[in-house]
Image (cartoon, rainbow, N blue to C red; front, side, top):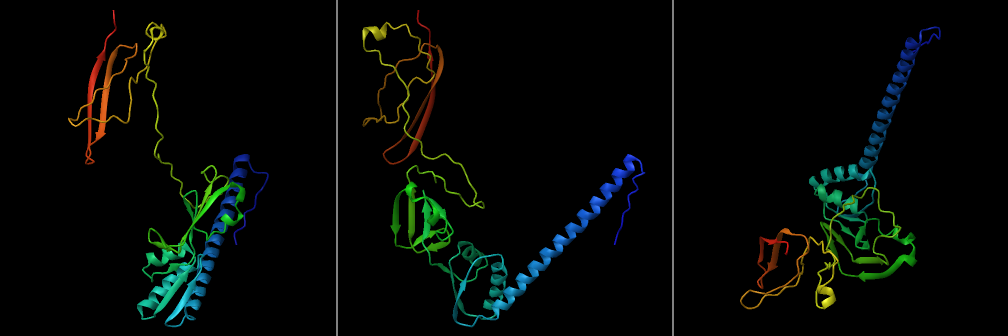
Length: 265
């Protein structure tokens, strides 16, 4: 046992060095204690998994739950199966099923349907959705057929849709990875003036548009040509014309060229 004695008659610098030394020794002992506790805990879980494997009989159906001990159970099961053990698995845990697939141990089937909230899957067997505010749910769709999501197979779908469509007030699993991506955009309309009356033609309001004309639905004739007309703005300069389109057979094409707008006299 290490003992450090501080003499408060020391100089301030020596006193602080002594205090730092005590803190260092305490933190070192705390770290060693934590590491030892983790090792003991892991050893106990591994021992529990090994004991559980001895209770499994050949040609039976084994139900697997979830938790940190399952990793050791799967490790021991893989060894037993390689030695000739014949068993089938049933699990309600998506993470356990992924662990079995990763270790190439059987092909368990998840008995519960997948729960979707505004299209986002919830892998908790519907536990959290049962506590969700029903007044926020617009509709519930039920599909009884099997549903395949990656390597997982679910017995049906329970799809909840909220009024706002944004998981309103629902707490997403903290282990989930959230990715923002740009989805399909709504059709936009860009202002393009039409001078049809005398007042419009003689208007003194300046036009400073830098996007002169945009339309998404131009259809060409049999000769592949179409004529469009538009007004330029009051800003002289060079403008890029970007053409993009699809042919009837689905081939894409694009073309860019420059036009120049000159100031009138």
